Image 1 (cartoon, rainbow, N blue to C red):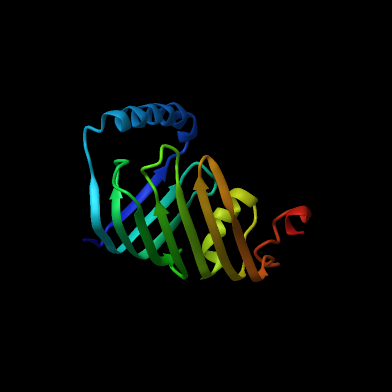
Image 2: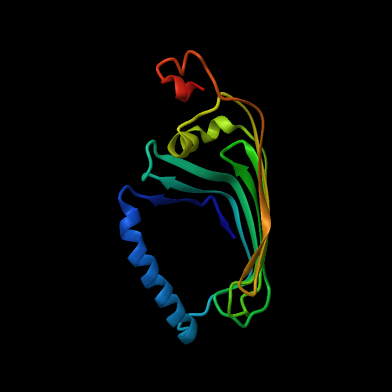
Length: 188
């Protein structure tokens, strides 16, 4: 068991152009490593408890951090080899410090193509905690409301099936005092 872990993946400004060749190189190395398997890792049962993981994006203006705290992750039969059978991963935590996140995954690594089932549920998140994300990608922010998200996905035999359903409830996006310096179209 690992407890009290705090990890952020930082996407630095200007990284997008540098990442493409790196990703392509990693993909080639992963294919080679799969064929050679110099190091075998297998987690029969594992747990990460009371931890926090995040994604920091410094590529956008404004930058933002998306995170899950109070994370409890359970892993069973997780391996980097393709001969260990079905792996299971479950995760619970608080999304952005206030919403409840639950996700489950079943991974079938023995198949040559990606093969897994995944479900994600995020309940009763305050959308104000997502304001920097909204400002960076939609040039908007919110004052109040609730954000909920549901997704289920199956990837099997080269096909993806599933759904993604974000829900916003009682959202207030306009504050006359805060938005007074914005142009008319931005206010609308």
